[in-house]
Length: 435
Image (cartoon, helix red, strand yellow):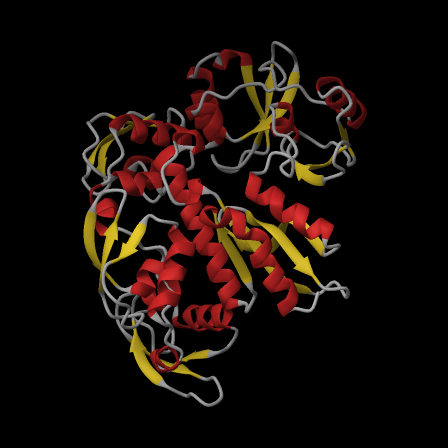
């Protein structure tokens, strides 16, 4: 991680707390405690905290936390809402920072854990420490990131145990697998001279697979920026990153089955393959830029990438779980203003994260958000992508929860264990906001 400047840290704290906290001394690094002041009226408490805990784990003013300490029953309820029945508290709750004994039912381990860490998504230490990808999983993930540019030439031993990798330039080097997967470690030889000259690139193209059929036409500045190529066989030009051409063996899209459409031909294709069930509403630009789509059976409209739609992606509202459908049906019957699959630009991981439903009052002011978390949010389910996708879902859930907490948005999370209580939960919220 690039070290932040003092000004960047001040801006970061101001941004995630809406100006509620203030840095009182110069930032050194993420793990050195620094003095922070809670500026909230009636508090003014000053204490030292690691920036990693403040920013990543949501640690906040200890005085205010003590004054609003939740009960043991409230903690158990929060634990169930977060994880379903995956964790069981074996000791009475004594405060958010006081460790208690917790049973992780999935692996059978009994661990000592701070409640605030547990509720922030930092689960079983044993599973986090000892769960390793198998060698096949690691190599598959490496290939999905780099294609054939990098290969592991030594057996995978764990995320933090360095092994040997080979770059497509022929260089062999040693690196920790997790750094490779985070794209924080690259070929040391190419790093010294990362941008070949145009003449050198032309030679690399010529020596690559089918390279004699391609010419570099123009726009070359660096390997990671798209340049213009000519495929001499079909006489078509196209834009592609030289890294994709050289290292991933990507070639002419016109000859590789990536068919391009006009707005009209794309519309005809959609009507043909869905037998008139779906209708594109927006302009088709290319396969990667989202177009507005309408499901004529339910009336739902959403944005989807053309290539994903043509590969089988369909109306998310109709493919939702029983829980999501009950939420939508409830809000519809009650004539409540809501938007399904609601997105907020600043709430994102790699892209913006959707909330199942956003509920508004008659003046179209947001009142609260609703998330239904199925069993796959708490347990490994192979049909939902196994352990890897579970970790990604949990990460997304934490991002959503932290965003709502930082921006004072009421987020109602309904776990699958409360499927039959959905209407009761929403009844209380509707009454609370006089909707």
